[in-house]
Length: 329
Image (cartoon, rainbow, N blue to C red; front, top):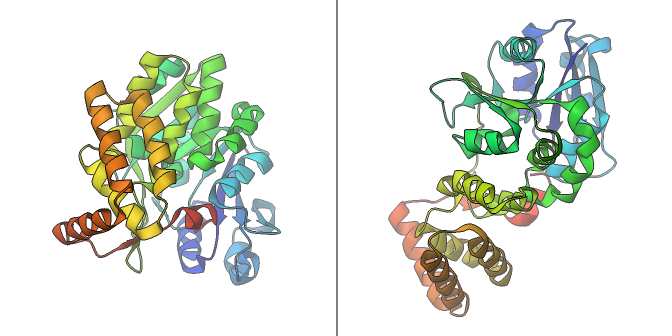
């Protein structure tokens, strides 16, 4: 066995069953399956007993956490408890391709020296394969931050990354602990990363009118601390910015979030630090901070602007809160 497919799951029995049914025809002696149940209301081992048994007892391990550790910590448990050299972390609600496992194994065989690989998804399809070396090369090769952040389309050399597990836990709040470990490894040792054009997984669609807030998923900006030089920091941020922080919509998204959660001061602090670090030109950075300060000091105006934005965009979905994310929802 050289590959583990780990599925962190919490209260998604239907979605998990769909993924398991897709993976079942792909069973081989080259990989094992681990289910990391984040203390779901209905234990995954019981709900999916028959389906898991079809994989064979020697190929399946189900681990149930004593309590809900949050989404990031459960992903890190996948790294911590894996015993094979290579690891895939597949979200329980994401849909793998019919040859998901075969494509990953083939990529590993072609580039056994790689530390990390990412495939195209329903979010973004790249036009050609790209291979990078070292931390600066990895940062410059990022053509779509969503596909780097989206863990289900990635594979990792777990044996090399697990000594840096502490960085994953230190940056668990970034919602990208897997990238924190990768950045630190590349910073110290270099290494090859692979960006494939092949589309391998479809991101889950929002259910019940709930979606992820772009303000929530701004947390990966905390990873900038792991990039040692200013020039690389700016390139790294520019790779993230078009997906989460396009100005002038940044201020409007903050208005929406502040009216929904009341986390005005926390958001202002986060984005003041963010814009001071990387946004260029400096005038635009200063303007963004000024706008945010103005809106935070005038909650009624912020609420009114937020309502206008929602009406103009036609958006009726509500955002998951920060607490939801760290609860593993």
